Length: 145
Image (tube, rainbow, N blue to C red; front, side, top):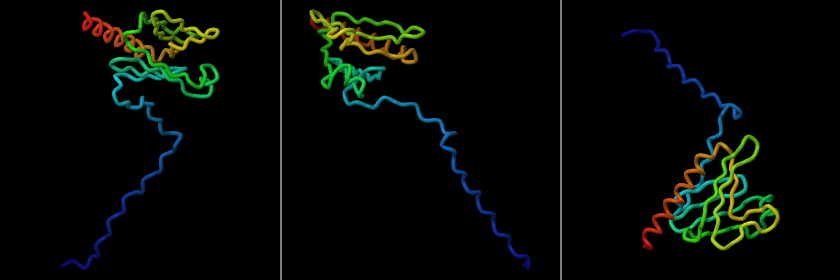
């Protein structure tokens, strides 16, 4: 037997607290919506695509001032006559507009209640939304025939 004392094991180094400024924030994911096929957030509204309709909502004080308190729209896919998609430019945002047959979308000045503006970074997602709306409209038209 050895008379040598056993050396205690060194303690694990204490975890260094991370600098909050060094931690990158997680990308803001769209909240999961039951029954929604797609959900996108634009500059002046949110679009929720369901199997039978589109829902456009507006959040925030600026949208209340521009669109009013009751700024929510639900548009049945069968009522959509046209989808206008304008790509964003260098300065101006793009937009997607859902034209309903027989209705004027511009009510006061240049405010379009059936359109949502978006930035260049979200152009691909909004283009996917447009294609998905077309596919659902085509599917509904085939079922009617």
